[in-house]
Image (tube, rainbow, N blue to C red; front, side):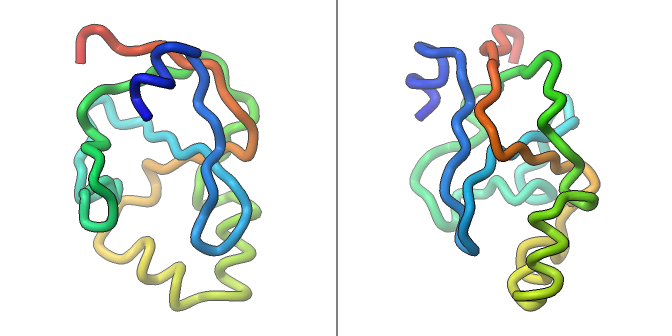
Length: 107
């Protein structure tokens, strides 16, 4: 996945467990894998192998204020609890649309 991002310079929304598609972002300069839910418990890829920077992202919203989270709160509160428990959702941002990105060469 990282190679494709680097080749095209775009983050594409991916399917979510509860439906819909999102790009997930963080404001942490050095991401904490556990706090952000980036462990490889459910996927084989190393999601901390590289870092991509997004400049202006007006379509990105804080997860805690997002309509997607509000929907989960109403429809699947147990899933929301599992997603956020022991993590730092205040550092999560989401976008339902593709975003231009560039690889952080200093990471």
